[in-house]
Amino acid sequence: MKKIIITALLSMLIITGFAQDLSYGIHGKYTHPVKKEVLNNAATMSDIIPYYPVHWITGYVSVEISATRDGKEIMAAGANDTLTKEQKNILNEVDLGTELVINIKFKSKNSVTGNIYVDDMNYSATAVPETEAEYSSGNQQMTQYLKENAIDKIPEISSEQIQGVIVAFTVDEEGEIANAQISRTSGDPKIDKLLVKAINNMPKWRPAEDSKGIRVKQDFEFRVGTTGC
Image 1 (tube, rainbow, N blue to C red):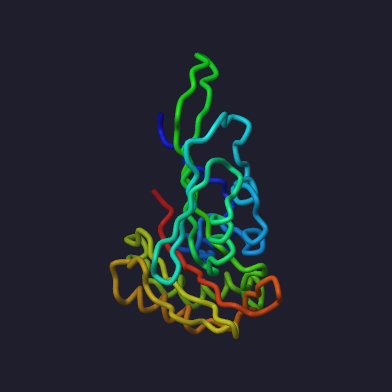
Image 2: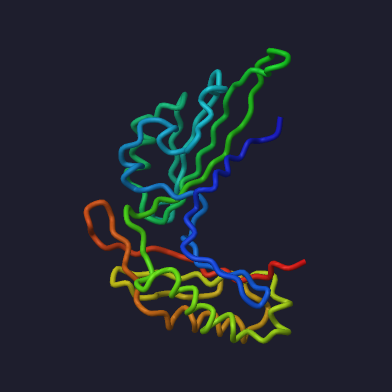
């Protein structure tokens, strides 16, 4: 059997736009976000994984949760979908922005033959703040800013050649842009420089906050790429 990879469309899209045959948008730097407060109170896999398929799982072989902390990988295993004390410790101690990797080897019954088979489920989630950072002037103004200061300045001939570029950046505790850098190049140093400059010159954001109202930093990505044939 092929491995099952849960891909629920949960990543929050902050803002997207379309101009000059280019799609562009700013996203949180994650695929599946999960609030840190949710992780702190989780008791079962269903608390972490939306639409967890408990109804067709008949048994478990192993359930592993892993993450990176202080540069080292930490892992804890369980016997079923109920979290162990060690697994809860990982969820409680993981830092914001850290990716959690969940690997589940489970048993299920073939609906046609009635035979029991063993399969894998792979899921990753990123711990995010209770209140995520937002562009202070709103999404519409962000779209306009990106269009005027980045997209419209890309030469037409160059835009046709862009396959996809990513500028990674952080919104710090004061709402300022920090650490803007190319994580996937456009192939044109001038375009890369233009996009990084546009992000660095953005107005302040409303910073992210944890469940106690304390301001925290959050990572984002500015993605630009062609959408035509």
